[in-house]
Image 1 (cartoon, rainbow, N blue to C red):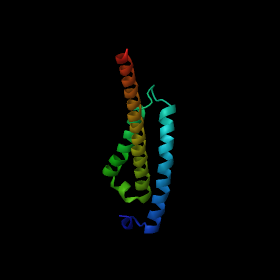
Image 2: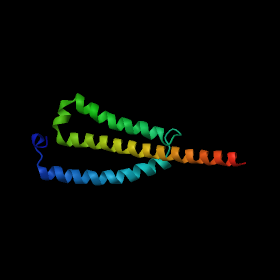
Image 3: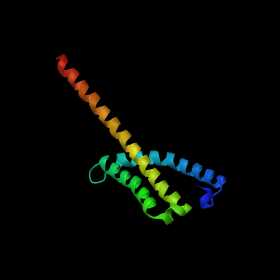
Image 4: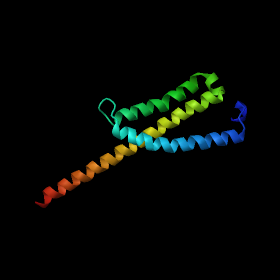
Length: 117
C-alpha cells in the first residue's frame, strides 16, 4: 500500500517510529487529562464519548472520500487521530475499571465490618 502512494520503506519505518513514540506520550497525557479536567461535570464518560468520536470519524471520512485514501498525508493524519482516539478510550476504560475495583473493595470492607459486630 505504501508503494501505491509513493512512499518508500524507509519513510514508512521512520513514520511508524515517530507515531509510536507520540502514542506513548499521549497515553500518559490522556490519563492526567481525564483525571484532572472534567467535561460537563463528568471525568470519565465525557472522555469516553469524545474518544469514541475521534476513533469513528476518520474511518467514515476514509470510507466516503476516495481522494483521502489516495493522499498519504491525509491518510496518515486521519489514522493518527483514530489511533489517539483508541488510546484515549483505552486509558479511560482502564481508569473506570480501576475505580470500580476500588469501590468494590471498599464496599466489601464495609460489609466485613458490619458482619463482625
